[in-house]
Image (cartoon, rainbow, N blue to C red):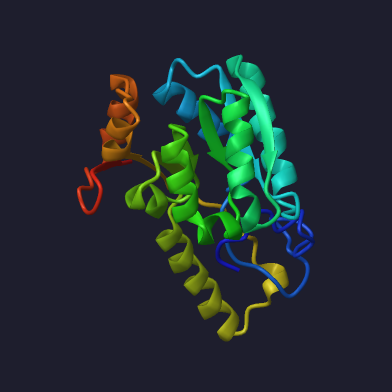
Length: 223
């Protein structure tokens, strides 16, 4: 596995340190980072007082993501609106609910459906004037307001190391699951401008410090 969000919770392995079966590889921590994403969104939009969270109830990893996001919202004093989407036909209704409750921002839990229909989400977020933070850097580069998460290319490279070890005779049960150490923060400056937002200097410094500035596609700052 290369990008498993919660391999223990999904029943793929017994524990990160001792997988115990025929599966091992890399976990991406996307669920655990949901609280951090809310924290970063609040820092980028200081006036944020109510945040919507988009969840797919069918995704087992979202239990962990919800727990982390709720804890962050409580610590930040931000009101929390949980919005469920089970299939692509529910996106419009979901954003109508966010608008009705006057959400000032949106955190998306990592989910393949949300990734597949990201352009639809970009469009609805723009029409609703909702700054949204995703889990993958490519989404911010394509049009989302922000993203924060693990570096997927690094995860794939790490997974290749596991493949090499297993082909040479190592048993998956004996190979601890690796957790990422590199995380990326990307801010899409074009989308921020369209939303009428001025990114606080502290957040810009965080995105620029010790990292390169990415200018391919929509203007963005990559951390």
